[in-house]
Amino acid sequence: MSTESVPQPSNFLRTIIEDDLACGKHQVIVTRFPPEPNGYLHIGHAKSICLNFGLARHFGGRCHLRFDDTNPAKEELEYIESIKESVHWLGFDWGQHLFYASDNFEQLYQWAEYLIQQGKAYVEDLTADEIRAYRGTLTESGKESPYRGRSVEENLGLFRRMKSGEFPDGAKVLRARIDMTASNMNLRDPVLYRIIHAPHPHVGNTWCIYPMYDFAHGQSDAIEGITHSICTLEFEDHKPLYEWFLANLPVPSQPRQYEFARLNLTYAVMSKRKLHELVNQHIVNGWDDPRMPTLMGIRRRGYTPEAVRAFCERIGVGRSDSWIDMSVLEECVREDLNERTPRVLAVLRPLKVVIDNYPDELVDEFEAANHPQKPEMGSRTIRFSREIFIEQDDFAEAPPKGFFRMTPGSEVRLRYAYIVRCTGVVKDENGTVIEVHCQYDPASRGGSAADGRKIKGTIHWVSASHAIDAEVRLFDRLFTDPNPDRGGADYKQFLNPHSVEVLSAAKLEQHLATADPEIRYQFERQGYFRPDPLDSEPGRLVFNRIVTLKDAWSKK
Ligand code: ATP
Ligand code: MG
Image (cartoon, rainbow, N blue to C red; front, side, top):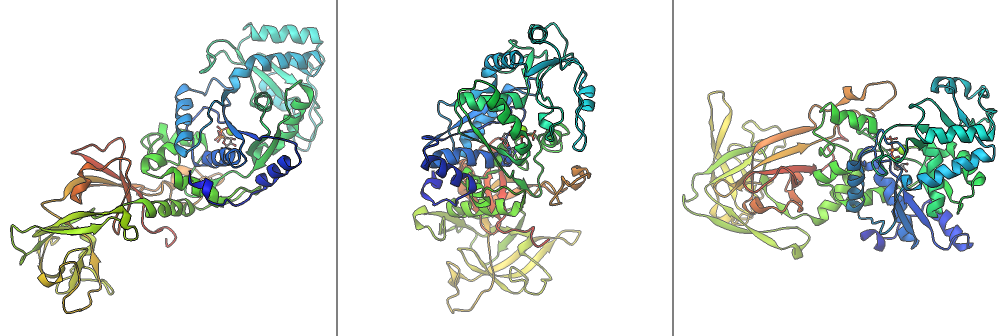
């Protein structure tokens, strides 16, 4: 993978790990990527994946994929499969190290009993609302529950009855007995187990009590021998609890938690709740809609894993919350695609041009380089004939100042082919130009005038009789506002009404008829495109615009 050969910038986690290895604290470092399988991965997760797998790769350690599957109510097998596929797509592999927090349920249960036996956990009968009220606030200490003083025997008996299914959902919970006056709210007797009578996607009907995330996460780290448990900053407040469990349970290892700033990306929403809403309310066409910030979405759109990894490198890893502009991601995509894509000619909004002095039956052939800087990418033959299509935008009957494309009376270069002069137009009954007539200069084959006269403009074209038809989907940002998620406002009011434009009559260079869906192209002067992997088929081509050639948003 490319990141191995490229020197990578340091970050504070690298420094910590280098020190831990240098002083012999660890021989091998072990990290993990711990998604909850309750949705599909998004670009924010890519940051965590690149960080965790990247550190392991860099230091010759390993990175586990662990499903933090403690809440059967929201989790599904479909998400598990999709998450695995997305991690692989990004270019990372967990090898043998696939884990499920739910595989530790028996051990976690034993440890819960252990805490009870140590007098460090009790069964709570208060309702969820009462627990909340007793918990106090940031400025006011909590109040002890009347059930906090239950004996070890009573607690054990009740907890076993919870496990055997005697009580309905929500009737009781198991809580740690820590400190109701702790300034850190997470230490005010946090809930460890709750009753949920629901089958679990990984362990089926084995359990009707499920551990809370906090009780499962650190202990799973310890069981797997994770050395550096890297999470986002909102877990900083949970760290004392993470450490309390490790200190109070006979765990096999002592992982350490480190926090980094999550990725916040402008013009996008990333909360799973909102992404679910966009899908469920049919605002987008599913999780893999090319406008979605999900890995499935950007993959379908045509972003490459290399570009996403380069983006994650570029934004770095720090400890202060910040926003990354969408243009940074788009620029990484452009840089990668600029290197790898063959260039082709495609006319998205065709206007017919007839070259009146070009012989009727003649077909000219030109050899066009696939990449201007990379002769090794070869060339292809493009055909020219009497009737061609150009972009509607490339013709102006009354040109604005500085317009160097096709206008009546002046000359323009047809890319790779000839210089032509527009001699007249045909209009429909509404006055719209539907056909343009030209004369070509036979001495300008290849695009330069024999007498050396300068031609300012060059436009692209396709031969009408050779071009193939395609639908082209122009995707743009899903939101018009950089912070659709900003406090209080409904993010849906910022939806971009032009986030997709479908052009159904595009005309493409002939050899795209057999376009491989995995190949991306630069449509010259237009942007980067690829066949849609689901909707495109031979005979009915559909191309997605991956990204424009230039950032059009910074000027808005
Ligand atoms: P939710 O949207 O429901 O809060 P989540 O994004 O935290 O969920 P998880 O499945 O718990 O979803 O995330 C898996 C891992 O990815 C966690 O370690 C989490 O910290 C990390 N992660 C999630 N979002 C981001 C983000 N925007 N930037 C960096 N890492 C993230
Ligand atoms: Mg989470």
